[in-house]
Image (tube, rainbow, N blue to C red; front, side, top):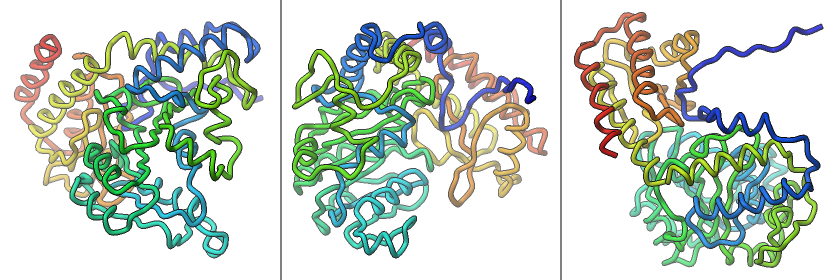
Length: 409
């Protein structure tokens, strides 16, 4: 017999998944064992739809959750792309790079896919690569869309591979000017940044995840939201998928023909536990308010940035939930060794997944003075253990300023 699995309690200080709120875990554990079509479950799903619309900041009827992780939401979003469709995708990190691969697989013709099934060279897809550590800017977006005039364009909002925020306003504006259907990977920005998707009319489709800014259990629901012109394309051309088909997923959430209906149509078996947890995570997000939460992320990231800089590190990111850095010059090239050592101490930071190797320290749902002090203390201890040094008093003074920053917010 195998022994019961025991997993150590660690601090998840990476790009995500984040630390699930205990109240969400409690809702998951205490949900009744209910049939997935039980009235309480269905009512919870209805409320989730409305809470998601408020969190996304949208009047899109086609706003719901796709069962699974962020990959499920992204796959649902790009389901509308057909073989041969013209696409522009912007890449400035690991995860926008995977978005590009997904689009090349979707847009590849049968012959292109057969030539290389896992990495097709789709002639209709133009990948615009921006240097690691650099944001995608409006001028780059404008030039690419003006040159290629695609049907679709995709960009990540927050790219956790390099820790950069990309210009979603410039993306929306360029899509409007050139008649392009914009798609945004908001996996790392929803629930972290204070924005409303209806303020970006050039973006027809958005996809996020449950385990980062929403801070829910990984296997609940990936939020998506689709504008009517995206749905119109689906109604005209369909989608070559079943599990993540946007229209079929929407039906089970009681969204049909652009309207909310009293009862959904069967597509997948929703878990009462997952609905309860997701509902609580959304409720807590709305209770705190996106503006308040976003301000806390800004304050906490600023303290981390200043503390790591005081330790001699070079911060190259501009995200508010993630700090990407190079170690001090005397430890240059030891970033992977540093991450491995920290993880051996149950301090779950991450390396970048592409070159050059850097250190990523995240604060998803770690927004208290105690959380930030713990992260900085653990980071500093690892630095010293591996031969580094820093002015402890200076760093302590920086940490001490966080309480005042949070109080001001």
